[in-house]
Length: 278
Image (cartoon, rainbow, N blue to C red; front, side):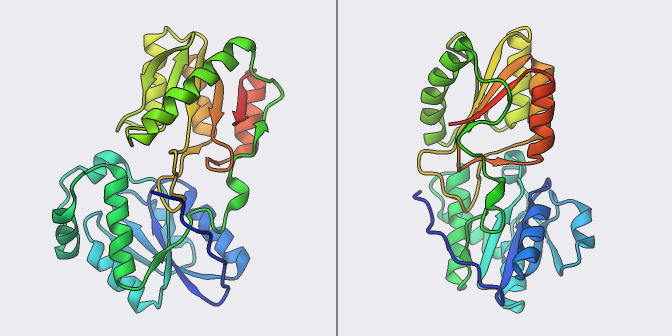
């Protein structure tokens, strides 16, 4: 899928937020509030934090299979543009949750059950009801990773060699929609992310390599659609790297969200890790 064109922020417009887990939905709400935009939330019941109900906005709880309910809610609220923010774990998507009629009709048309196909189909269903899915970073562009070294320490020669090798492999894997993270040691792939998620892949690599000299490479897809499934790292990523014995993290600049950046960089500096946007 190609990148969606950037959409201008219209302050008087009502935006819909499709909220998954983690802090991302709250960052989007804060950004929308700062921009003067009204926002209503369709919270995914299996994923979104209960705290979203106390965020000072109108919230409709929707099960992961209740696509029709979500669309009806947005239409009642006059939503013309929506934003997806927050992870919906892959195992939830494939958990066999009972779909409503709208979701079931959509699923029957799918030729593949990978993330891009599923989310792309949701985008098409929203569009059929006049709801455009906007760039998920529309209200939070400052959270995107800059290009260059974020930490005090630059990658050592060994780490840079692993980053160079890892980028080539990770981009090929991401292009197949298999995962966005690999873990490398001595220019060999130790672990590849699948449905278990980034942190679990890093920890698995730590066990395989006996927690020694690992480099983590997390990339955007070759034609990353910024409307959904944007790669994310943050403080928990650094904590997981420390537990696994990883010393370097490379991410795609401008297309990777970095949450709690100050705290993540501070911990990386404290433990002599390096983080770089490439």
